Image 1 (tube, rainbow over the protein chains, first blue to last red):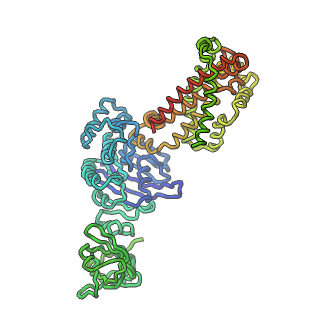
Image 2 (image 1 turned 135 degrees about the vertical axis):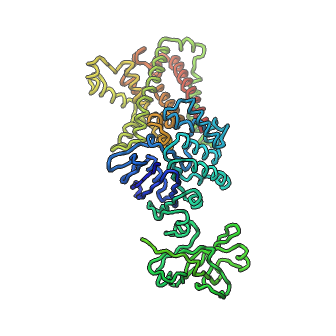
Image 3 (image 1 turned 90 degrees about the horizontal axis):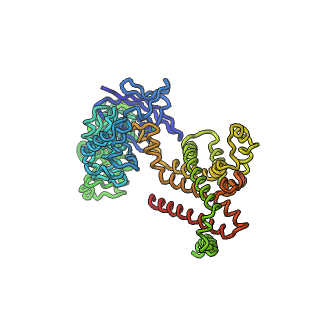
Amino acid sequence: MSTLEARMVVRRNDGFTLDMALEAPAGSTTALLGPNGAGKSTAVAAMAGLLPIDAGRIALDGEVWDDPGQGIFIPPEERRVGVVFQDYLLLPRMTVVENVAFGLRSRGVHRTEAVDRAAEWLDRLGLSGLGGRMPSDLSGGQAQRVALARALVTEPSVLLLDEPLSALDVTTRADLQVTLAQHLEAFAGPRILITHDPAEAFLFADTIHVVEDGWVTQSGTADDIRLRPKTRYAADLGGVNLVRGTAIDGVVAVGGMKLHLADTTVTGEVLVTIEPSAISIHLVFPEGSPRNVWRTTVERLEILGSRVRLRLGQPLPLTAEVTDAARTELGLAPGSEVWVSVKATEIGVQLAGR
Amino acid sequence: MILGCFGLALFVVPLIGLLGRVPWPALPTLLASEVVTDALRLSLLASVAATLISLLLGLPLAYLLARVDFPGRSVVRGVVTLPLVLPPVVGGAALLFALGRRGLVGEPLERVGLVLPFSIWGVILATTFVAMPFLVITVEGALRNLDQRFEGAAATLGARRWTVMRRVTLPMIGPSLTAGLILTWARAFGEFGATITFAGNLQGRTQTLPLAVFVALERDRDTAVAISLLMVLVSLAVLVALRDRWTRTL
């Protein structure tokens, strides 16, 4: 079984530096998740061979693709990497079937056979009858399927998907997610998914690398990232509140106030995570057991369907989530004075690394 | 609006002036004269040859200027576009100094039996010198505007450099290349100054249509007008074809 190992340092002309390492085993999906401008596409270009790395080593199963130290660089046409590009990049002066057959033709497959195999893949992706169209006459969803067919038809060793769904509208995306999941599952080699959408990464990936500003800031499974995020960005991805503080015997000092934890032994620099839905909002001081109660202001409201996200003010700016019904009942609006409570058992904590 | 009409008048009035002077009854005889047919043959030959040479040499040059970052690139670009602003006579003179029988390159060339000035080769060379920049700048612009990620995508599909060039790059710059070729041809067809300076004005050998007009204006106005009309018609036909091409691709 083949594994893609990539240690990549790329110094771009604009001063940006990508410095990351990843290991993508065959038969599993590795996601690079990060905001725009984090260097994800630069990483794709490096792995595909479109951009030589400045230092590091990219190898598939010991077959070295790029190693500036040894003076090795295998050009893209010899790497057998299937790439689905962000905006598809279907060749504009060729028909759909010619686009899909192009990779086979370039590798010396006879014209008739190439066209047959291309047509077969178009069928498989539900594109029968569209082979004669020009790429400009396709919808986004269709273009995406053609791009996927084009990447898979040559039976590459590695599959790279750069934001495969981001250019699509919501309904098309939901539809294509299913198709994409099937084909990722069926692809035997390493699959690398680049995305800025946490839902996409959580849905498809076995391992997620969170990329920020050219670095991998956290690696792990979807649950690792969602429940134990290490950076503010990762926390926002899951909608989870993330606060850094210092714990002494189970009490964390954060921003001038103290949070009580369920575990009273924790001591040291910690990352505190609180699910937005674990934060309760009250108009009067709450009776009962919660250990953590404080008074604050609602600064902003964000309505997401039947749920409402509240941005809370000082002393501890957090995001809380209530139902729309609760919002109406409590009469919440920007500027409302409220009491906030969080149960000690609802506060996640982990020792902060670096 | 009014200024626009004045602008248009600037182009239309001379054309009407020309049409008004055409000796219609004598036209067939005038156009059939040996001077005219010789010049037409030479003009077509030289302009088509210049266009083909421009394609052969200008395309790689445009690629070099657009894609390869080398020191002094802006200077080279300046040199390439110089014939666009230089008076053609100066260009012709420069060619004469370099490639004339006593010239820098001309002398060794003559020793191997190749005499450029005052020959059909001289006409083609002078014409190419003046016309090729049109191809180079058009194609260079198209190559710079081309999204290179398409070529990258083709490479990841296993296409080698030459395949990428042939099946991706060239088709994508196709409309600009066509426009550049037609502009180049049009400039070559109308070329006068560099040709007369470098290649001279020998009927049947180096006298192209513009040169024939120039000579005829002195002696035989009717022939001059007839040749001018011929040139207007040929050029107009080509430009209209070019216009169609433009509107189709936009």
